[in-house]
Image (tube, rainbow, N blue to C red):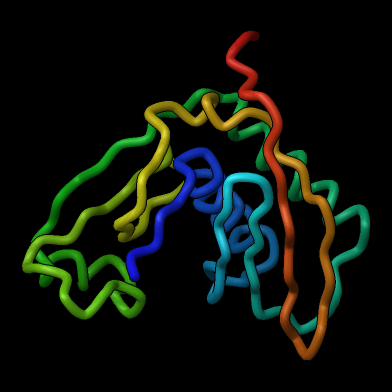
Length: 150
């Protein structure tokens, strides 16, 4: 069965991954469930985040969204992509060319999902809840908007 992602939620996942990795060294989420109403991402962390950390993540994701960066794609040979990106999560039947999705200068990774043309289409990002169990931080998030004005 092929996964279908909401472009707004899926692009927000890219931004959340970049913010989590830069702030906490978590790497990209290792498990995600992306839905139109609410999505979740799981990260490996050694300790819990404070409420201040969570608000900082939320605020930083929203700052990126408000910056109105473009979302672009680039196609690379699988060999060239392997030099710069982790290809472990690509489907086994991926061809010899790999799609790289860039969110401005914030994030770049291999990806097969749909994305918005401009990140301001995402709207407002809100962390609905979070929990830490056995070294896994689960972040559940929602989107409102989109907020294209401003």
